[in-house]
Image 1 (cartoon, helix red, strand yellow):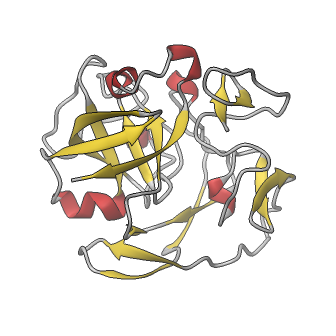
Image 2 (cartoon, rainbow, N blue to C red):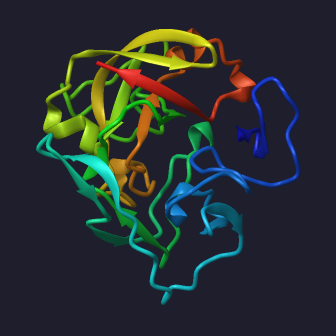
Length: 229
């Protein structure tokens, strides 16, 4: 399921009553940490479920085979937590906003396999919900250009900047150029448009990427994909 106009549903299908935001998984979807679920949900026994953690709750440490920021494979676990603050937030594309006092896991790694990733929606235009200019070249990009940002581990210190990746999703294939990092460590500030750190398995795509995959505007939010260099 993905988030469709604020409700969980499937592309081309009808939504259900469970509220959601574009950044998170819906109720009943698989998860490993709370950050894999919508902001109003928590991860319980591997499934996103209703409820919330108190500020003093210790989250489980999740380990997964991953590629670290230097490109080596190994064990990936949260590198720390970031406590949210009230920062002006750009809510374009139903972006999730940081909540004051809530803690967000930080990751410096991404899965070693790129066969299971999540495509999210982002505007790389100046003033868009992407925040500052792309980390690769210090530029902004129109929504009509197929560009992406990769989670910190996959971004790998900028080693993929300017490279074209192939994205498979919704029964289609397209290509896009890597121009930015979807920061899995930092967030909740003006540079990141008031949004929390990215999850570790995100390909943040421009509207043009979603269009090339044949997803209607009303169904865009997040979608399971695979990608390759």
